[in-house]
Length: 343
Image (cartoon, rainbow, N blue to C red; front, side):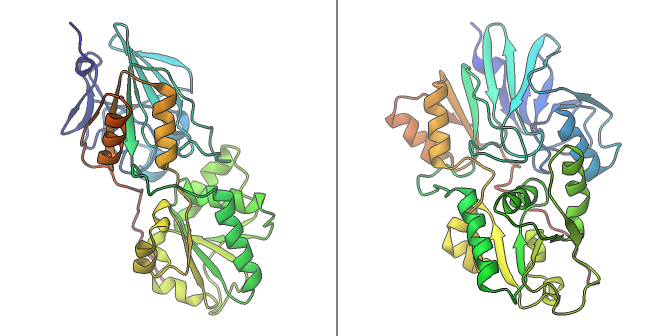
């Protein structure tokens, strides 16, 4: 009798598919990898063959160089591919540009690897699409009932109001360079902010990639070569590691903001010295995770990289068969560290 584990199971290198001889988001170099999205904890360089969406492959090339893999295989959303007799399909995950769930079919079984996902609207990428399956392998970054994120539009509205209240101060927003930064910029545009947005140099190449993919970020200028005390009343977007660096001291009495789901935890905001925490996450919160399980009703839910215990308890109470995979090597956020040089 064929078991679900015969199709996909955890290994030290990541989720492995024996009949297809490939890994999903492996944490070490392998011969064949299927990559869900371009964040560095899921998309690593050095694989033999990488199958992913065209946008994810472009992101990997920007981050690691054109020779990041031996060979690339681009698959569009909804397109069917076969790897050693195992059928694959990539479906939007709603996380960042190019992010995909991986539908894996073999001998009548269907398993879906969510990668990172959210169910909220995001103007920079296609929305999550639920896929019926026997096994749903879900992230659980915010898998505790305390995590219930407010609408991102309301959080960006708080930023706009602060700009009106403190027109003499620069507003320095920490946001991860891939996905979060571009989402914040688009939401600012939708909120009516039509002035130039200034960006740290680490953002520029990915911003240009998003623009090439049809995501209009509006007027953007580099935040360098400026006089001390510059950019009062303006928005500057930078990697989180930069907002507390001496680079940030050149701006006019900056209001430090940080866009992250973790900003709902006051202690984290205080620890980072964030004056304006913005609870904006590119991961599903507790309500979205539970709603997804209730919608899909899989025979089994496998839970990974996050707070697994909360969802395991919910599954036990609600009659959903579930298990924790306890995969290692995946971060709670794509928390890049950049070297910041003063201009």
